[in-house]
Image (cartoon, rainbow over all chains, first blue to last red; front, side):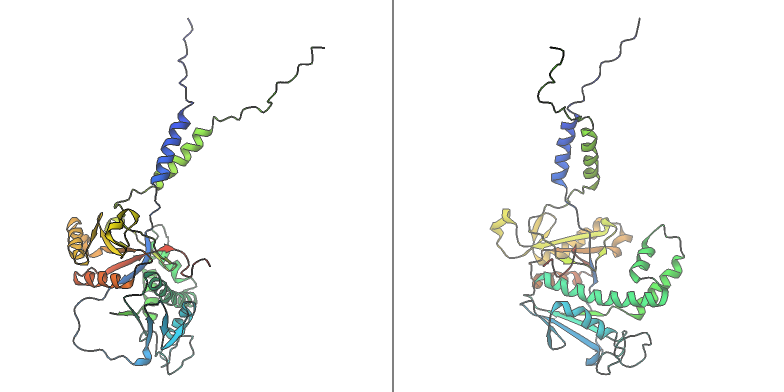
Length: 195
Length: 158
């Protein structure tokens, strides 16, 4: 006798079940943000000896309670900050920095190693503006590093760092690390915050 | 004469929906994989600011989260000033030290130096609160911090 086929299961409501689950996950999903601006806080212990820094090597950025910017004693718009910071860092006033492309103005910073950006904010400053200013200052450093990496090694700094983190990158990681460190010493990130 | 059968009215044939479950399942799997269940229930408004020079925070288990912002609409009784939230409840600035100590104790000893503090702060909060948090973090020597931001231009879209 012919074997009787098992009756087919009715799968008509599968879509409904799947929809139910789908809607649950849609509602509960929050795409988590896990990126941001990394900073390092200064350690607590105060060193006794005062370091003497020439006034021309400090780039002062003041943020007041009304979110207005005062850069080197002049009012500035946020959109001009990046270019101003770049110009200050890349100035190379004492001529020891042969890769600097700045104006070599003796009244501005000596070299990128000595140049310090000092950021001061008030308690009423909004967090949004503070982050915007931080972002612009970090961008100034990143642009200079990118330009330096492009001139020296033919790739951007961002790409070099991405390669260093990439596990599947085929090149020599130790050499890459050396190059990255070299660029970091060429343009060290010296950003100090006044309390 | 009756040989010319009139076609049935309502002539649109039913669309074949046999592939519908497949499509729905595909979406379902995407959301299931992409979902990260929140560790903390937020009691504050947390509209992060925008920045474009961001670095990714890898190693999620080595991150301590400090939230700050003004209490959300369900917690109006706590006022409208920005507050700190640690682990599902509002906290005072001086509780941060204990929080950091607890987080450090819960991690393996050799990983403690790599711990990063992620500050998830509402963009409308003011810097006084953040200055206090930073001062508190310096006291307990938790120096690596990350201002968590959304990716985008700082100038906004207008």
